[in-house]
Amino acid sequence: MQSSTPPTVLRAIATAALALFACSGAWAQKAGDIVLGAGWLRYAPRDKSTPLRLTSPVEREVPGSGSSLDYADTLGLNAHYFLTDNWAVEGVFGIPPRLKLQGEGSLAGIGELGSARLYGPSLLAKYFFGQPSDKWRLAAGLGVTYAHFSDVQLTGGLQNTLGGALGLPAGASSTRAKIDSRFGPVFALGATYAFTDRLGLTLSVSYVRMKTKAKLTTYANGNAVATAQSGLTLNPVVPFAYLTYKF
Image 1 (cartoon, one colour):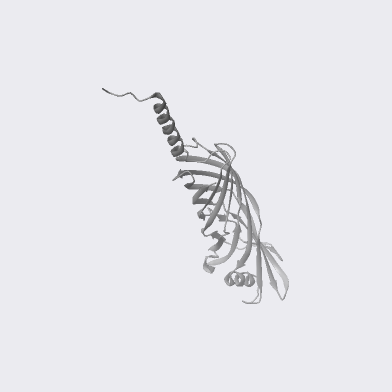
Image 2 (cartoon, rainbow, N blue to C red):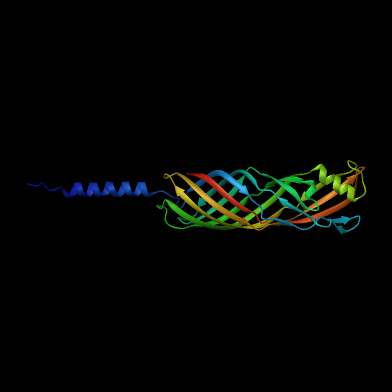
C-alpha cells in the first residue's frame, strides 16, 4: 500500500525549492547595488592631424607634416550604481596612460615627436537589458568624458627640427608644448557575465569623439621666439575588460 505525503510536507518542499531557485538565480545587478570593477583598458586613437603651422614670428605651414598617436594600455577602474534593475550610472577612471606621438609625412624621419599623460574620467548613463536574474546581460551607454593632458614632453629631434626652421643651430633652442583639455561624448556597448551573485566579468567597447589642439612655444636665450600649433582628431576606440564585484 502506498503512503501519501502530507500536504504540509509538500508545501515545505515547494517553498524550499522556490527559495533555492531564487538564490541560485540572483545573478546580476539590481536596484540599489554598487558594483566596482578593475581590469585591462586600451586607449586606441583613430586619429588624424592637421599639418604643423608656425603662427609667429611668421605664419606658415610645415609642408607635408603630420603625426599619429600610438595606442596605450592601462589599468582601468569603474563603479556602477544601479538606480533601477535596468538603469545605472557608471564612472570610469584609472591609471593615466602615457600617449606617444609619432611623426608622419615630412616629420616621419624624426620618429617619436613627444608624449603626454592622459587623464580621461568618464560619466555614463547605462541601460542593462534583461532581468537581474539573468547570468548574461547586454548594456548600452551614453555619457561624457573630460580629457586632460599633462606632463607633455617633446623629443630632442622635434625640438632641433623646430629650431632649425628658425635658423637656430641644434641645441640653441628649447620648445614646450601644451595640449588643450576637452570634453567629448562617449558611446558604449558591453556584455556582463555573472559567475556568482557577487563576482562577474564585463567586456565593453566605447567610442569617444574628441578634437583638440597642440600649441608649441620655442625659446632661445630665455625668450619666446616662435609659436606653432597643430590640430589633433583623436576619436579613440576604448575596449575595456574587467572583473566586477557587487556590494
